[in-house]
Amino acid sequence: MTPDLATPSRHTLPEDIFAILIGTVLVSLGIAFYAEVQLTTGSSAGLALLLQYATGIPFGVLFFCINLPFYALAFWRMGWPFALKTIVCVALVSYFSGQFPLWIGIDNINPLFAALVGGGLIGLGILSLFRHKASVGGINILALYLQENFGIRAGYFQLGVDAAILLAAFFILPLDRVIYSVLGALVLNLIVALNHKPGRYVGFS
View 1 (tube, rainbow, N blue to C red):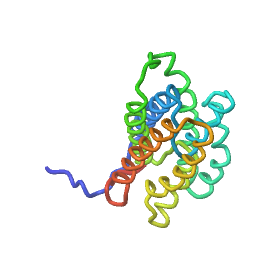
View 2 (view 1 turned 90 degrees about the vertical axis):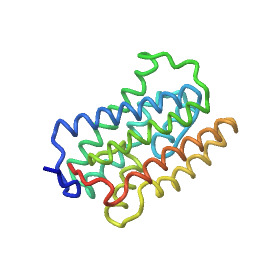
View 3 (view 1 turned 30 degrees about the vertical axis):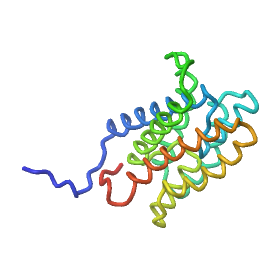
């Protein structure tokens, strides 16, 4: 019997756990690529990277702290399951991003490769989390809320916010690193914009 692919199906708890692990690993690996060659991205991750370059404080500490105010929005507007999963995701990304340089050797990576592949990894990771009602905090929470309640595309909204963060990068990073960062941000947001929209994916958590 052919399954009805248009009928929404609920994700099981193991499926949610697996998606969260895969999503946070992909995001963390992309961030590790970026950090190695001093690139940045948008949302709270990009802000944390810029602050790391400027202050020397580890990305994981900055990323977790920056996201603290957004948990209130997550609980208030998105519900406690989403908020709880998001807190877990932020904690995992904060941890994994600091461990990847210890687990694999990425001390010789081309900046353009890091930008394009890193942006792709982060985008795919965010997409995985979005589809299981989770996020990596910050602007992702606001973007998902706006899409589900007002029909504003999450990827396009994030693209605008990311542009502002990338403008700030001109004051911290060399010009070539900013250009690479812009390319990575385009890849990341196109993945989310083209794949995360109403009716594209019918599973739910």
